[in-house]
Length: 261
Ligand code: COA
Image 1: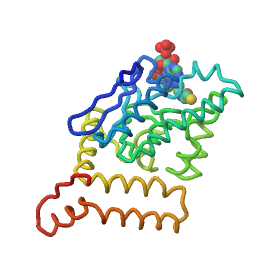
Image 2 (image 1 turned 90 degrees about the vertical axis):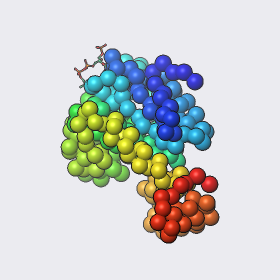
Image 3 (image 1 turned 180 degrees about the vertical axis):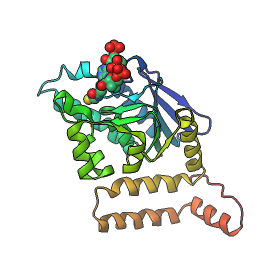
């Protein structure tokens, strides 16, 4: 499928790079972009040959500078809730992809841009990255998960501060508070994201999938529920060829060759 607001680059190594592509508007997330992202993620989820995703922004300045404010301006109390829900559905679909999704945050990740990055499993930031939830400046609250995912990532005190002040969070602060996993010089960001992706893709695909299932679910579960889920998924791994291969390769002192079976 071809898109106008995102670029899809399928790498021979088995992962896909999605580039948010409205650089003249700092990759602001308009409805068309969110719909195209939703379609692309749906397609990736159904395509068993895709084993990972990197999401980044076109141009030098932005990952995504938020939802498109020109479109936001037209919302009212009857259309606002639906708008918020549709963005949430698209972003939750990213979070629930059972393959690793890395956000390569190359610049501004504000509002919906920060929310999109937080729906990804890992955030790698360029030194130029600036995160934040500035919706209060517009008289609204975050609508694509910002009140929920920021709280889970950095804790309620910091989440309340950033959501109430709208302050931008520089890359090093983001790393310190757990919002970004790592910070790299801008010209190394994609290389580092690809390096991390390749490291993960060398592991057993079933183990990656079940790890993501367990960890993503963990934030909504009690410890007893989470441990029960972990035990079930662990047991399922023990029935796979990848498990026999991984443990056998260790014992035979050779690299494992996982097949995803
Ligand atoms: N929605 C729509 N358009 C946006 C946008 C957004 N969220 N963010 C930036 N743009 C557009 C600008 O209107 C401008 O378009 P124009 O050239 O047609 O006038 C273009 O992108 C470049 O942005 P500009 O503001 O000129 O860049 P800057 O470097 O001076 O400032 C920001 C960068 C990120 C500080 C500033 O663009 C900004 O505050 N954006 C809004 C951030 C926000 O509130 N996001 C949350 C939305 S819920």
